[in-house]
Image (cartoon, rainbow, N blue to C red; front, side, top):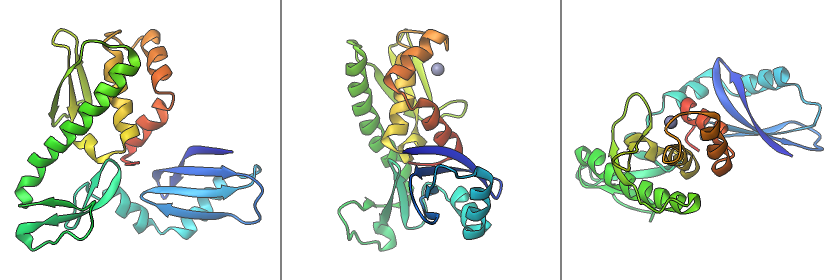
Length: 215
Ligand SMILES: [Zn+2]
């Protein structure tokens, strides 16, 4: 059996993927801000938190939480950390999935285009699943109060540009939320029934978004 739980590690909320089964010793790996750990059914959360804290120094956790979406030589796109190549800085593409930009000052504008294409594909896919026949228009922008907004009259969705750094399942959870507003313009019980029908992991995915866990 596998489940996800939020642990408190050095005061930071960390998503822990627990694999519960018959094992002799606790084993764990730390990858991209998530912890994967194998435990027996009799595990105790407090003890696990303690042993994780002993194995992972606070500065490792802190580094992850303060790691920007875009660094000197990397960029998070759909939850994956890619090599970032900036040609004006003498960067050279060496892998197919490298992200190549001419100038560092182009990145944000180019990223919006990349985000637009990816978000639109997800919107069309989920519209189809939900039986929405009137395709929405999309605007990608920097949002502050929320990560998405649905405009019933305009049949339009706006999505935050920084969602592009998160996994497709996290992006989908936001898209599904906004598309549920096509049917319900509030956050009523009916709204959440519909949302959880099309996105059963909504709560977990929202938590990841809140905590900056990118995949
Ligand atoms: Zn809403």
